[in-house]
Structure formats: structure tokens, C-alpha cells
Length: 326
Length: 213
Image (tube, rainbow over all chains, first blue to last red; front, side, top):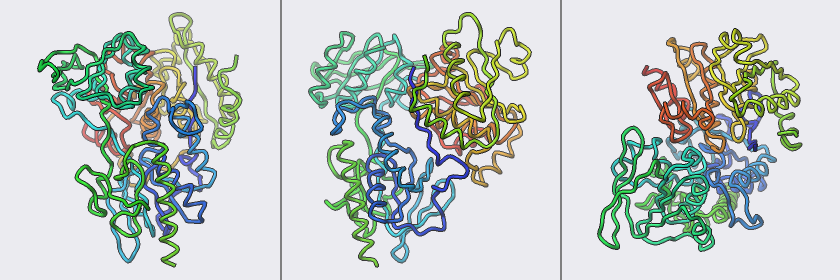
């Protein structure tokens, strides 16, 4: 039996690390993943008055069962890596506002005013947007209807519910192959369905092919998810031989990449049609004083090490900007 | 053998030192046919050891059926948190709160002790207005990092309003119940039997559903 302790003291009544509505921060960092946490570390070590706003404190790494490509760690559960990040950042007593979303940002007289989902208002001289991304949906019939009823987006959360059952994993990148490996350990049968080719690291693909209960369908597209109360199967189209067929399954895990969480900032900074916030190599957005880092930006390759590096850069850029303000 | 290692014990001692008043953990087990009862009991004994303000009371759901009835305990293993005056706020855990759920347990203990975070006043008013009886079930798995957030919100609502009761339910231990409520994604939140939410929803979303009842 294991215990994943990550209670954080900011939920205590008398904690001092609360974001203060009356304070004018040097930098408010929006996002609690690797980019946001590293921004916070660098900002505070540079003497900036910083605060973190995190809807999901820890970010998407929390959903990763095992990270094997972060330098210095041969293999570490995503949870533990985030735990180490958080512990490091929390040494600096940076105030954190959790479970709260930014709804609107206004810029007035070189200052930024944030309206939050809980009705509070915050203000800062600069912003670092590090809101990351969320799972991309298949957009096929049945996906919405059966969401949480067999259609799942978090393999480590919902995988255990499919013990001994038949499961489809849609996607062909690292996260899809990792999910298929995790689920193959407990499920009866796993079908990996990918509309093109496998894009995952070779090391992961090699590991997947050691499982005898995994069947891989490449060049195959999910057309529909069907069921009654719960998912019963999916209809797919095999492009390689122009045939449609059914896969009977109790669940489908959708792991087909992500879409940036840039919604509340689209009126503030320039974004691309795919939702990514456009930044230059110093993490500047189209608005002076607003910086962005990590998966929400145009920087390619959504990786933990890249996001944390980008977070550092954004904080250093924010620091340089503030020094010029003075 | 101890379930909690030294590092966790040390962290827990530190967290529990922030508790305000005493909290009683009432654990219900049964002798036969309960796979996780022994572990749950051993785990709670260790929690009592590291928490100066934590008291443990152990019950057998059959032998102590009166107590079980009083606290409306229906399954084992289960945990009910009682405040310093022995009052039940409708905060329960069905199944062992191990894995990520240790965080739900800690939050529950802190909250019932009176050291929890204040609810923003606008929300507090909305919660206070709820007059219909509300029963919230939050189905979880122990490997789910988002689940404790949903459990903590349900428990917070229960603590704020006596008309609201909230239970964590470990989906694999109570697989029949999971099947009954079609749980195939966690956290799954069932409100008064036929309203459901999936995912770690903000407290506003819980309220919207409750207000629509």
C-alpha cells in the first residue's frame, strides 16, 4: 500500500501565503505546472514580488505515471517530480491562489488587472501566462455523451476501473503509448488505434510490443463511440484497406495531444488559430509586460524540460522589463 | 510492520500540529469478508499516533450496530470524522483513504478541527441557503491525483451546512456500487442519486447542481 502525500499548507486558515487583493505584484504567474513553478522560482530569487495563480497546482505532469526523460531522473512518477518542484518553490513562501481561474485581464496605465472566477480582483506590473494545455478531443459522435462513462482522458486515474476489461487507446504519441502500457498491465485486451503512424519514442514502442494483449491498428481512424449507459465499443475506419469495422470495448482512452489553455487571454495577446500564444525567443508576447511560457505558447515540443526552461526565461525577461520600468 | 514511513510520519506530525480542536476518527470494520478492514484500522492507528489532537474510536459494524445506525454507516471499511464535541458533520470515507486519498483524509481532519480555509463570503451565503437534504457521493480511485480535490470540496460543503452529507467512496473496493452508478471515470460525483458530475469540479459547479435540485 502506498501513500501519495501532497497536502499543502495553503489550504489552512492561518497561512500567510495568501494572494492579497490589495497588493501590486511585480509578477503574477498564471499556471502551476513546470513552466509556472520555474517562473516563480526564478522570479522570487531575482527579488520580484511574485504570486502564483493555479487552477491545477502541479499541472499535467500529475497525470503522468512515469517520467523517464527528465535529466537527472532515470525514472520518476510524475507526481513525485511535481512534488519535488513544489517543495523547492514552497521554500520561498510565494503566495499561491488555487482552484481559481482568470476570467478577464485588463491593462490600464502599464498595470494589469485580473478578474478571477471566484469574484476577486488581482493586480500586477507584469504577467507570465503558463496555463499549459488540456487534452484534445476526438470530436466524434458519442464522445461527449459517454464522457466519464467509458470515454476517459486520464489513464492513471481511470485505468484501474478497467481491470480485466477490453480497452481502446486512441493516439500514437508518447502519452498514448504510455497509457496503453499502463492499461495493458491490468486490462484483458488493449487496442491502440492511431490514424497515422506511431510518433512515440522508440524506447516506449519497444516496451509496448512486449505485451501480448496489445493489438495495434495504424492508419485507422475512430469514427464513432457507441454504447447504452456505458461505452460498448467504437466504429473505426481503416484507411489502409478502405474498410470500416467495430471494436468491442468497455472504454476508450483519448490521448491525441492537447489544446492550449489560452481562452481568457485571446483578447489580450496575439494567438495563432490553433490557440497557441505567439512568443519570441525571450518569451515576450505581443503585449509589453505580458510574457508566456510552456505548452500554451508557440514553442514546439511539449516536454517537461522545455516548459521548465521556458518558465525560467519568462521570469528573467519579466525581471528585465521591471528593471526598465523603475 | 508500519504502513507509514518515517518521512511521511514526520510530514504528518507537522501538518497535524496545525489542527485547531480535537477530532475523533470513528472507524467501522467487520470480522469477515472485508479485505481492506485490517489495513484501514492499522492505518488509522498510525494516524492517531502522529496526530496529537486525533482520537480513534473503533467499532464493528455488526456488534456496534447502534453506533453504526446513529452515524448512518452502511458499509465497511468506513471512517466518520467527529468534531471535538463528538458531533457528526456528515463527513465520511468508504474504503481505505490510502494512495492520493491520504490527502482527502488530512484535509478532512484539518477542516473538522476548525483550521480549514474560510469559504469566500459570497459562496458561504449560497451554501447556507440550502435547505433540502443533499447527499454527495464522490467515487475515487487511489491513483487519481485530482480526486482529493473533489472529495475535499464535497466535505467542505457538508461542514458548512448540516443539510449536506458527503462521502468519499473508493470505486474498486465497492465495485457493485460503482457499477450501480456507472462509474467508469473518476472523480465521479453523484448528488442525490440522479445528478452526476465528472471531474474535479469547482465548488461553484457543485452549488449550481445542488441549487437546481
